Image 1 (spheres, rainbow, N blue to C red):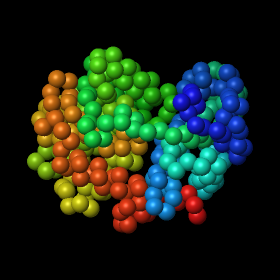
Image 2: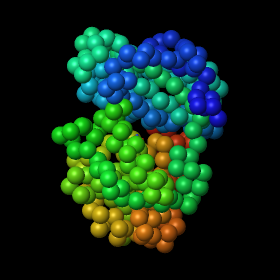
Image 3: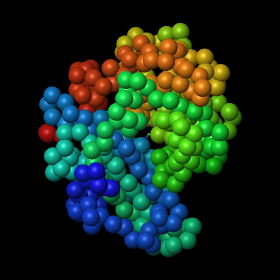
Image 4: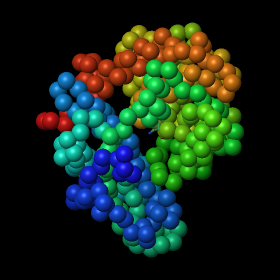
Length: 310
Ligand code: PMP
């Protein structure tokens, strides 16, 4: 794969630009100060062709993130939807990852922006299993990272998906990989579980599916909300409550949720094996249901799909 994967063209404020020419100025505010926001969305193959999973929810979060940094863009959600569907059609991909970025461009190059242009760009590319080909079946190894904590809301708003915020995730991922683990888990500054660098965390205890609330410093994942709804639909009890390290370590099953990670079992946390060390029954059920929903095999959740072919 090239550095741009199979991305052929990029949508920039209504123009379709060949990927090689999709460049921004060195003088963009975002390059110097991290002032951009983004989304990660997936399009999946279904029996009736490709479909984007929960596109309105992702576009809503993009607008909310942009608003929090005063990066207002003129495009409506309908315009962005059209742009995304056109890009997928023109690339001829059945499945892909979709990456919109709203960034602060040229203008004043100081911390306080002034009349800087706002650019909206969308790229797509093929992206397989985020945490490796066997992650969904075998699960991943994790560590509670020691050198990084999730930032509290008084520093940066964890519910905002901003470019600069991801230095926190880069640090956590680097530490986990350097110590030989597949992925890290970050605690919040209170010492309770926050989230993964790009995933929310769930545990299963005595048949109850538990995840932590937004006050615990997490991004409110679209996948997290989907998993909670799928559990309820399957008659599996759910609770949203803070998760202590002890509760995490004592869980029967633990898994990550995220657009990229989908529903990935966690096989171990530091030296401790979770449950039997294999994907547990509740995780299996929710993963099966999630994959069925994204691939259009659950009629009840058809409303989560935006069809690429009208
Ligand atoms: N937390 C963080 C820090 C993330 O980057 C992501 C991925 N967007 C998630 C959680 C999961 O969010 P979603 O399910 O919306 O992809």
